[in-house]
Length: 355
Image (cartoon, rainbow, N blue to C red; front, side, top):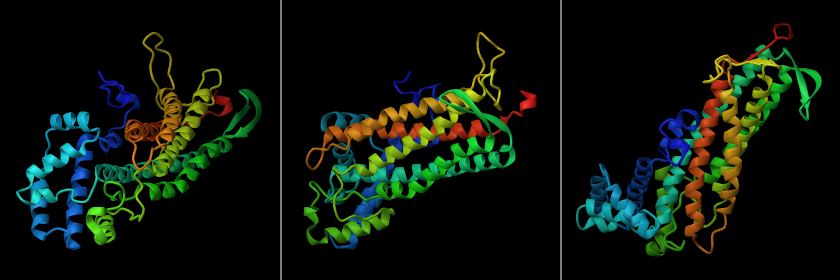
């Protein structure tokens, strides 16, 4: 049993997304933080902050690093973040005296936020591919079945007949606009976090900016000259985008569920859910899931906007709230895109004479 449907033994079949969820696993998070620490050592060695022998030792020590998860759990319970316990374990793995150079000049939030930026880059790449595929499916549906006649409804009442192309366009065009917005969202997320304890890189002296630039290049992230530890507008913009995507897909699901009703019969689903009591039914499960996930992300979006409120230079409370919400919103959006693709594949508009 699980408290979340996104990692539940069987509810994941309906609401989960294995590919997206994998980016938020503990293993993926630790791997990204190890990548950060190795890249940091390389950047600092290139600028003469640490010796090249320390870099070699750090790379050897962390190449197959596997921390004790129970020790990390105890560390988080004590410290509120994983980095003190994780860095301690890393330093013990790296041969003396080079272990003390692990994480030099960085702070916990640098490693955690950079790990998130790296993993969210992968998440957005997956979502972009899926979103483009859904748009392409709708374009094909519009081209092949757009001439079918359906009834337009305003305020849930029959209005006038229109072509299916009109309805399909109302599904497709918002998704195309979300694709246009995506680059701006990615720009705000793919940012290196490296600023030290209070955003000044004080331990690196005048070499701080150069180390930061090298680190950003090594990780393929954007170098910014002002710390963003307490500036979470990029994460909030991502959450808004995720909710826009699931909301637009939810509108598709709602329309299809209504059009598939027996007494309406304007579309035929390629597949559907059965009933334990009424075997004659074909329930519009996929369409309903799109509506559910749209409402779920719309609800969590308010929480992500609450996480914008960081007191001073860092907030444990607001930051922790972000950890709770953003992964769930991402998995929900991934599941929504996956479900929409399956729902639209084989969707048939019914000619009036065949209803």
